[in-house]
Image (cartoon, rainbow, N blue to C red):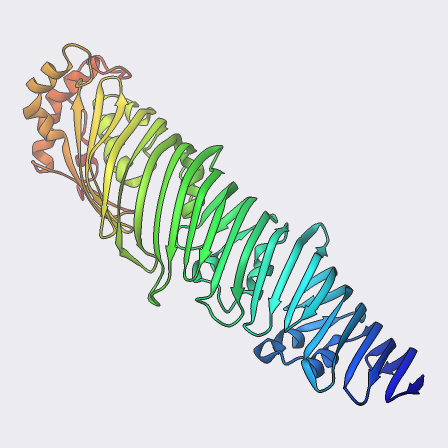
Amino acid sequence: MSYSNGAVEVSRFLARRPDGEALLSGTASGETGEFLFTIDSQLDPNGIIKELVDLGDNESWLNETQLAHPPKVHAEGRGNWHDMAALSAKGSIEVTNFVVLGQPIGSFTASLDYSNNLLNASNVMIIQGDQFITVPLLKYDFNHQIMTFVNGVATFDPRRVFRALDSVLPEFLREIGFDAAPTVRVNGWFSMDDPEAVDLVFNVAGERFRWTNEINLRVDRISGDVDWKGREVNLTNVQASLYGNGVAAGWSYFDWRKLDGTLITFETTLTNIDLNTLVRGLSGEDRQLEGKLDGSVVVNGNSRYSTTWHGDGQLALHDAKLWDIPIFGIIISPLLNSLGDGLGNNRARDAAGTFVLTNGVLRTDDMLIHASKGLTLLYRGDVNLTEVNARVEARILREVPGIGKLISTILIPLTKTLEWRVTGPLRDPMAKPAYAPGFILDKTLHPIRTLKTLIPGSTSQSPDPTDISPFQQNPNQ
């Protein structure tokens, strides 16, 4: 150490504190207050940063950081004791085996440049096991408490990042996650204390995605772009593989500017979705369904209130077996078995229809189910999340080429006896004849059973007077 002309010069001065040590070289002028320094340290930064920088509300970040070892820091800087706001510095940092905001981190390295209350961190690398975050340039503005990312790439579990964004995170993002860390690319900025001040763009690609809200959506693989501005999020170019090698593509829009729920709009097309896997994934129930689902859907509404949902779409099933679904099986299987032994257990060839969603109630007027080569079933009615109110009509021989419409017209009076109302809870609906009580329906079904020999799949050759209708078997219906 030397002193000359009012200035102190220090060379390789070793300073020790209870939280570590530092090697210091530099000069300082007692007259002007100007100083230059070089530091190589292994000090716990909590105390030092709190002494030099006013972090305001962000001081909690330091308090929630636990270090196994002091970080290795090399820094070169200049400033003036009389104006610490004029401090400028550059250097590098390396930290290993620490915990921040409850998340363990294996290592953190970066090159740093600080001036005018703005910190630039370049070549940022965070590693934990086989997961990493790399950011070529990360900026933090202490004046406005704004963090900016430039070309960041991460293979971290998003939940670790979401905790850092907790103050500005929308509710729906708290419900999503990946069971395997996705690859995320990010550009943009956000404020640490203002939820309205966010402008981030993500590109996401990952496997085993889940959205654990009321519908419990699960996806094998998904990719898409996320544009998050203020209290609005746009998801575009979404491509997903889900539910038995099915494919979904579309977009979504989320708006939570109002405090009462999130407004959601989405449009999607579905191809080759396995029906059994879909129902089991959404409901948790195993009904042994069969079939593949195609369709397109457009829906919008408030996430908190199902009665606000509106939309429309079309759905089609092929190579299906629907009888294990109560709103189909409670009526179709007994009816078909009354027309032909075992016919009610046959695979439905296909089903298709359009729907309109109004105030959370889905309505269809044209759902056609081809139950066999000679029998078509028309479903019309309403269904919401808990209740069904629909009619099912059996159309015998309607689809036979050439003479189908003629036969169907002739059989209109009898066909009406095969129209039933399906009402009640979605999980346990009840079925009743639409135009006749059970005993009349039983009498009317006998001449209809003479058509068994005309319906492919029937094993009976003539009507059996001892046959009992499904309503006589269950008089409570």
